[in-house]
Length: 237
Image (tube, rainbow, N blue to C red; front, side, top):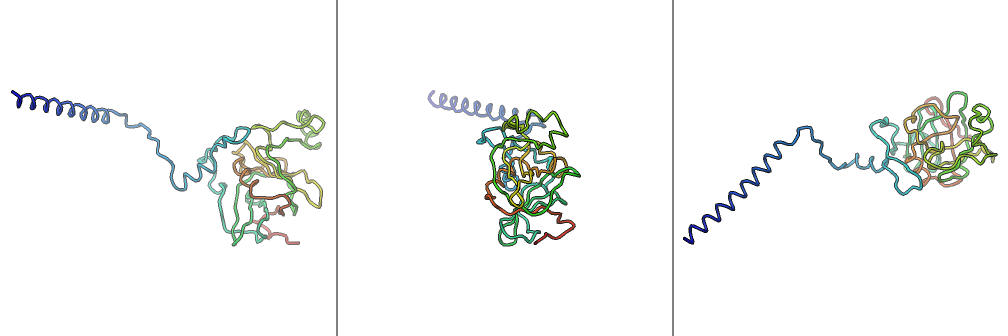
């Protein structure tokens, strides 16, 4: 009798295990074939996701950038320095929509930028006089004359408050030449899709994540050159 009871219990345990296995296999077989499984990013894709992901520590929203919609050449990357400038120099290459921060050992950090429309370009040598986090935007008097609807953001009215819709974005670097404000800026922009184009009134636009990175690397007083590397060698005068 005892042996019969042991065999019976063993059979029940085996049967229960078999049911669980079959149930699991049935569930796996019945899972839709188009189910998307989330796979953590690794390697280069992980680094890019970190570079262009959401910036949750900023005082205003900086959403993640859809990398698949950005030409890979305009993503931030270390390249061989094509400028020949001393380390620490910021070089804006208007011919190719790149901004270079020259580094040591013949390298440079390269960023994609958007540039001013025809008729509003600026070129030459200057300095990054100072920088601002989440700056106010004050359109120039000429800009207000061209676009009267900007009057509410004029100097007289205190400019536009910082924020995600501010044209200067998360950071701005102010360009001076011979001690005078050129009124041109290197700045962030929520309009990441404009990178690689001529769109703004002379300023140098960057993806917000990129201008945040540049801001941390460039001290006040850094030399700056705006030129066309596709046509001319940098002016060393």
